[in-house]
Length: 263
Length: 309
Ligand SMILES: Cc1cc2nc3c(=O)[nH]c(=O)nc-3n(C[C@H](O)[C@H](O)[C@H](O)COP(=O)(O)OP(=O)(O)OC[C@H]3O[C@@H](n4cnc5c(N)ncnc54)[C@H](O)[C@@H]3O)c2cc1C
Ligand SMILES: Cc1cc2nc3c(=O)[nH]c(=O)nc-3n(C[C@H](O)[C@H](O)[C@H](O)COP(=O)(O)O)c2cc1C
Ligand code: FES
Image (cartoon, rainbow over all chains, first blue to last red; front, side, top):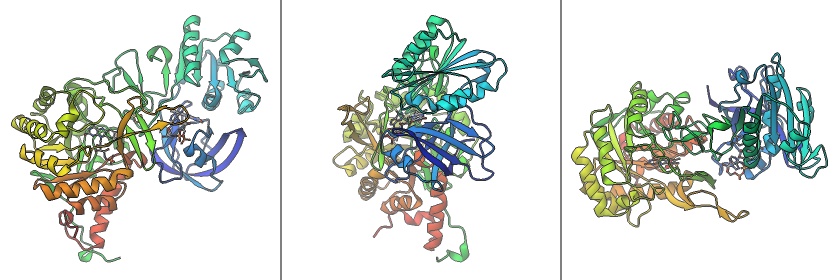
C-alpha cells in the first residue's frame, strides 16, 4: 500500500562532500508491509514552491525501529532543503515506490553488485538482503570520484568489497568494470545502479559474460506512482501497461533486466 | 466558526449537461491515469467524476524523455499524449472504472478529425457518462492545437463530434489564445454541452549550466499553482460569454482554490498536477468545500457558481 506519510528525522549527517545520510522514522503503527532492496521513496522538500517529490533510493530499512535510511547527493534546491533538516523535523514521504530487485532470481548465486557514485546507496540494502540468503555470494564493486568514500563499512559487512576511483587514489584507477576485470571477479548475475554510461557498459559486460544484469534506471518523475507517464524508458517489447514500447520507471522499474530495455 | 443550518450537510451535487455528479470535484485529465493508480490513496466513490488520460484510436508512443520538469510553483510536461489506444482502454481502464460509483468522463485526443471521431464512435455504446474532447494539447505537433486555437475549426469539430456522440460533450479549451471568450462561444456555437478550461500554458525551461532545454520536446505545458490566477480569469471571462456549464481547473491545490473557480463561474472543478504533491488532494477538496459551505451557511454548492460580486 502506497501512501504519503509524515516521517520524523531521527538522524542526519554528512558522509562525504555533498553527500548526506538521513534516517526517517515512521509514525508508530504505520509501517509498510514490505520494503524491498531497489525500491525508492519520494521525499518532499519543505518548500511550498516545490511540488514534486524527489525520488531517493532506500539505502537501509530497519523494521524494528521503523527507520528508513536514505543517502543522497545535494544536486539542487530540493535535495539541499532535505540536507538542511534537523533531527526531530518532519519530512513528507511518498512510499514505498517501485519494484525493487527480485531476490528469488539472485538467491543461491554469486552476485556482483556494481554501484557508481550516488548509485551506491541502494546496493547496501541489496547486499544485506542477499547476504542473509543461503549459498548466495556477494561481491560489491563500488565506484567513487576520489578518496572521499561513503558506505564502505556497511558494504564490507555483507561481502567482499572492491573499490574503483576516477583519480586512482583508492583501489583501481578507473570505473567499476575496470576493477571487476582487474580482480577477475566471477559472477552468475550482476545488479547495477549508477550513471547511464556505466549502465550501458554493464549491459555489454553481462552480455559478454552470458549472465543476466539487473539495472536500476533514473528518469525525471512527477507522480511517482504510475499515473502521469512522465518517467518512461524505451523497452524492447511492447510493455503490457502502455501497449507501446514504454515502461514506467516508477512502477515497472526502477529495476529492469538490461536485455528488456533500450538504453 | 458559524455552522450551517444546525450542521445539516450541504447539498454538494451538481448537474452538468444532464449528468448528476455527487459533488463538483473531478480529476484533471492526464494527472490521474484511469484512476487505478490513485485508487490506493483515495476512494474513487467519493469523487464527482474521474476524467481519464486522453485516449486515441490507436496506441501513441508519446514524446521522448525528459517529459517533466519542475518550475517555481508548478511543473512543465510534454508527455505527448502517450496512451494505449481505445481497445485496451475499453477493455482494461473502463472495466476498472465501472466498479465505482462515480461518473466517468473520457478525454479524447487525435491527430486528425477522423481520429477524434473514431474514438467518439467507439465509445458510443460504452458505459461512459461524458466525453471531454482535448482540442488543446500543446505537446502534440500534428495539428491538434489548431482545432483549439481557431474558432471556426473549434465550432466545426464540436459540431462533428456532437453529431455522433451518444454522451454529452465537453470541449476542453486551451489558454494559449488571445481571446478565451471567443473560443468559449465557438464551442457553444458548435453545440458543446459544456466546456472545461484551462489546459496547460505553453512554457519552457532551460538548464543554464548545460545550456540546453530541460524537456526533450523543448516546450511543455505549464500547470500547477503558478497558473491559477490565469485560469480563474479565463473561467470568469468564459462564464460571461456562454450559457453552457464550465468545468474549471488550473493549479487547484485546496478547497479554497476550488471555491474560487466556482465563484468565477465554474459549475465543477478538476484537480490536476497537485495530485502529484498530495495523492489524497481530491478527497480533501471535497471535504474542504463542504466545510466552506457549512461555515458560510450555504445550502447547496450550486449557489457558488458565478457568485462573485
Ligand atoms: C528511482 C530513483 C532513485 C534515486 N535515488 C537516489 C539516491 O539514492 N540518492 C541520490 O542522491 N539521488 C537519487 N536519485 C536522484 C535524485 O532523485 C535527484 O538527484 C533529485 O531529485 C534532485 O532534486 P533537486 O531538487 O536537488 O535537484 P533539481 O535539479 O533542482 O530538481 C529539479 C527537478 O528535477 C528532478 N531531478 C533532478 N535530477 C534528477 C535525477 N537525477 N533523477 C530524477 N529526477 C531528477 C527533481 O526530482 C525535481 O523534480 C534517484 C533518482 C531516481 C529516479
Ligand atoms: C502530466 C500531465 C498530463 C496531462 N495530460 C492531459 C491529457 O491527456 N489531456 C488533457 O486534456 N489534458 C491533460 N493535461 C492537462 C490537465 O488536465 C489540466 O488541464 C492542466 O494541467 C491544468 O490543471 P492543473 O494546473 O491543476 O494541473 C495534463 C496535465 C499534466 C500535468
Ligand atoms: S512518475 Fe508519473 S508515471 Fe512515473
